[in-house]
Image (tube, rainbow, N blue to C red):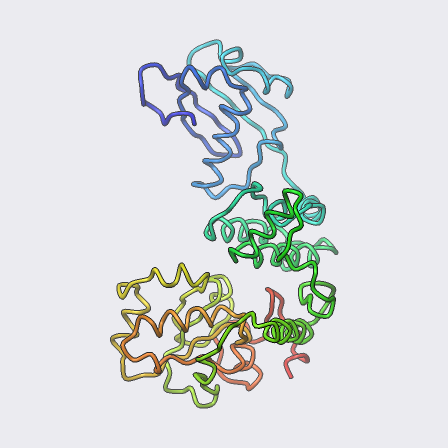
Length: 357
C-alpha cells in the first residue's frame, strides 16, 4: 500500500482532492510504477470511505486532473510515474453520483451475497459484513429511496447480511460465489420457508420464519434445548432489566424504555466477552433483578438466544437471565410502553398499524 505522508526519503508526496475531501499520500518507487488507478485513486477511495464516511467508488471517476493537466480516463491505467511530472503533485478527482435507481439496480443485479454487499469474494469478518450492510442498506432502504423496487433490493441486502454473518452460511455462500454447490446458502429450502422472498407483511414474514424454525428443529439443527424453560412473559417482566440483542440501528429506532444494547453476533464472539463489558458490569451491579433478553420475535434462531447464553455464562446466577416471550413484537402487540417506533418490525420492515394484531 502507498505509505502515509512523510514516511521514507524515497517516497513521492501527493495531495489528492475529490468529493470535497483532501488526502495526502506518499508513493514509494514500487508504487509509482503501478497503474495510477491502483496506486492513487484506489487508496484515496478506500481511505475516504473508511475514515471520512464517504461512499466513493474508483469506477465512478468521471474526470481527473493531475498537476493542472486534464487526463483522459484511459490514462488512469498508465503507470503513476508517467503522469506525475511536476512538483508539487496535486490530483483532483471528480466522481459521478449514483442515483437511487442506480443503487437499486446494482443490488438487484448482484450475482451473489458478497456482490450484494459490495464485498470481495473472500472470507469476511462479521464486523466487515455489518459495516457493508449498513452502508448498502442505507442506499436502498424504502424510507430513503423512492425507487419502486427499493423494498426488493433492501430485502436482498438484509438476506445477504443474515447469511454472511453466520460462519457456516458464509462458507456456503463463498462456495456458491466461487462456482461450488453453495450448500447451506438457503436456496434449497422449500419456498414456504423463504421469509425473505416476495412482498410479505411482517406477520407473514414472521410466520414463514417460524415455519423454517420448526423445519430445522425437526432436523435436529438446534440440538438439545436445555434452556427452553427460561422465559419471562411480557406482563410479568416489570421488574426486569431489559437487554436488546438486535443491531444498534434497530435499537435506536425502537426499544423497550431503559433497555441496554448488546448486539448478538456469533456465540464465538459473545463468549470472548469478559466481565468488563459495560452491560455485564451493570447487570452484576443489579444482581437482585431478573434479566429479560429480547430480539424482534424471540425465536430459536434469534440473536437473543446467543446473548442470553453468553450472559448466563458470565453472571454468577445464570437463572436470572430469561428471554422475553414473543420478543419486542409481542411486547408491542400487548400495547406495552415502547420508546420510538411502536409498529411491529421484521427484517427491517415495519407493519402497518392494522397488522399489529
